[in-house]
Length: 484
Image 1 (cartoon, rainbow, N blue to C red):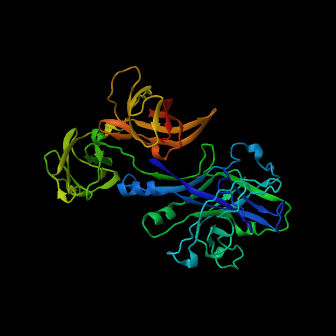
Image 2: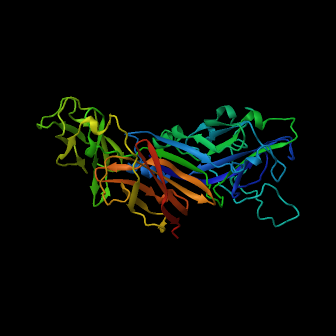
Image 3: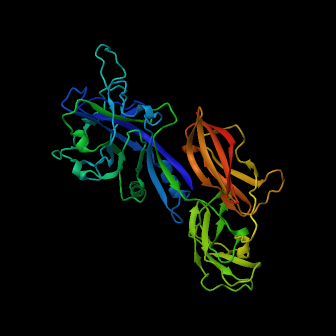
């Protein structure tokens, strides 16, 4: 499994019946209630757009492929109160009560007149403060330039003030909104985790055209609440935060390679792979190849002729071989890859071999137990303490061996890695434990720096052996730096 992050291209918080613009504020403040509001009741709404160009490119190149597995897309925004539970049920510095027990909705910014050829393009703006300090005539942090509650750009208004009417009495109503997701917040300090999988799929397959962004707001029942004497607030880091907690769309996709060529076992499903390169770079074929399995006598096995393959990731094709039963072991079998076409030309079949091993190689049954092993690691692809430009894609090969030996070959083990940054004594997770790719000759991971925030990164490694989990901390440390 791998992760791709897409970040906000713009964001803003618009305030009920106000011209205030807060597009450059590092915090997105969502609130509702009567307290300290100059109008009968008040609330705010967040709007944002996503830069999806790199994500679209990865899909076009096949780096992200859903032929062999699924991909999920989750909007993640960090709550400004999530770091200290003492903030719960307290007030902010502006006397706003921290909200609890509420729902937030994620919705699509609508087309004008319900016409997909009339997207409501909008500008982020340059404002910062919610409040105009009239005693400071040159208050550069306050702005009424669009976007705001009324205007999306200088020459254009929103079709409906505030984008939609929460009483269903306007030009565009809440009942007309395309609701993407709803999330409940019990304590108010939870992070946003909106599932946008179907929404992003619609963009990628072209069924959702001309997207201009999304909005986040409280349910109308909260926005319309009356009779309160307080303002209830929750906050999230915006794209202008000076911290590591920039909001993002997290795409998790299955590109895990687990090649069984060196451990092809009788009686279980095995996987084989074909790797396609051009001048050392992965390339996709015109069509997915097919696979036929020949037995030890060179005869095609019934049911294993012209097996379909799927594109696992760019230039890598996977085939699942159903369990082989009743064949002698250790015997040599053949996998023939056919229908190989590139740029309209047919290429010769690719013929590989594998040994069929008895199931005892994978399963141990007896009266004794196995002692867990201690492992050592060598790696190449990233140097220790290296400074890497955020334009690089690195293949990091990991050599797993028993500690205190020089043996580089190991039988199949379960190797994992995780990526994180550190803030003081806190480890901020970038990628949770993920299996290392396994090929007949190496273990490796692909690290794409292009969607990573410049910082100092750490990689931990973990090996599971004889029921014991051994974690090796800070095996690799490096920095990602901006290219100017």
